[in-house]
Image 1 (tube, rainbow over the protein chains, first blue to last red):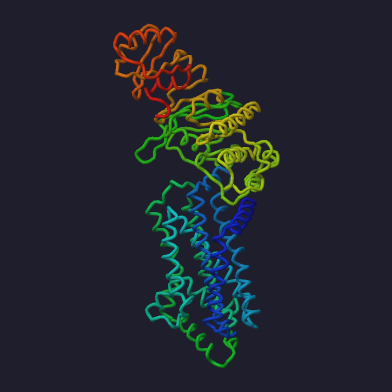
Image 2: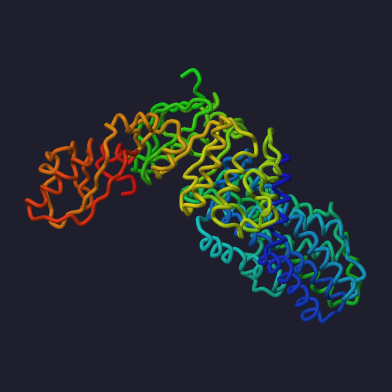
Length: 298
Length: 306
């Protein structure tokens, strides 16, 4: 336990000294924030509040980039080997990555909320507790996704390619950039298989419609993200490699498919019920309607 | 074998079709500096990494501090210290932070301040790892190997790639540890290093121990003969050179003739006379005192660095 804590501290300090971190965890999320709030929402407080969910989801999801790259770089440079001859375990190393990532992401989210409050005069943030729960669990889930990417890729180049392949559908098919309701019907159906879709929709639900933690949809999203995080973390611990020259067996890569199970099942169910799409539609309509957004909190 | 702290028996390790270690056996006594000497790719690092518990053998028995590295890796890691080959630390980690970080992982630990002083890194305490010179990085690697005051130290090629001045600094450190009766297992492909630092040496080639003993024993076993290396204008026959007065052995190696001589002056005189008679000329001549290199050449027909 103490090894995990000291490693977490080290990871935080090292990340803060890294210029890449400044870009991915500060400049990029705040860039998205001001683009959404200032340009898309035209600074209108209600619209800013509506778009806070997608903005926060982008911040949460972006964290997996740096994490997978850092771990692969540690392996390629032989840094992990040095830890391997010490009593540090693979779980210590992986858990410290996830927790350090969580600790580093939360302040960015808080600053985004402060910007919304003090620059764009958003007076209500709906159910902030629900939103923060989703942010915390989302950050850990996407960090675990980063760990899996680091586990199955052998080089930094491979990692960057896989990250791109994951990142693009996550941001374009989930409602994080183009609202879910504006996507073509077929694309919406594909989006329902992505964890990002539920993170975006439920963050919006929490902030715009004040959904409580015990709201059924929030609970489903939280449970799916938690189950996904457990599967990805477990798999990355199983596939963890300390040595730069040890390559992943091709068979092991198939196991990665197993981590998709929670969202494949949820996607099938949602495609059948269309509840998430209907909710996104209703939220979009209520943005343009004169009624207060909090009215839909039940 | 009663006072041995480390035993290796019939160790075997393959990488695909390549047999990296082929039945290596040796033991290391407590307080001894034991060297694994051999060319690159001989299987030294693989052997050491199996002993450290970071690589699994295919077969054979290994015991370090009474523990099997495969069965008790966590326990073993508290008892050993290691300076690995081709390893690194995060660029933006400061020297003192690295010492404190690694020290925090162990049940037993030494004072990081003392290690900083001992390894001459006091002035570099707040320097990032990425800004250290090669020698400073290596000194830090050795300091990190000592943070848990281990029973056995593993130094894998501790001076590889370092300039001669820094190499001598590392020798001083190892000699100091030797005086403290630390058990050290080190790999090297430098003859000078093995002769100067090691109490006993196992010469490894193609994954096998081909000779084992103290540097003096090994040299005596090969006859303690002086090596005379000559380069000639025209090729000659090693068989003829071997029969010259004062020469006991001759072989051709990369264009040079290596003569083993019990009485070097006599051998050189007879060689010069022979060359004059043949109308051949001497392009170069080097007289080398007996070393482990001779043992290696005698056993393998190759130089260590070939």
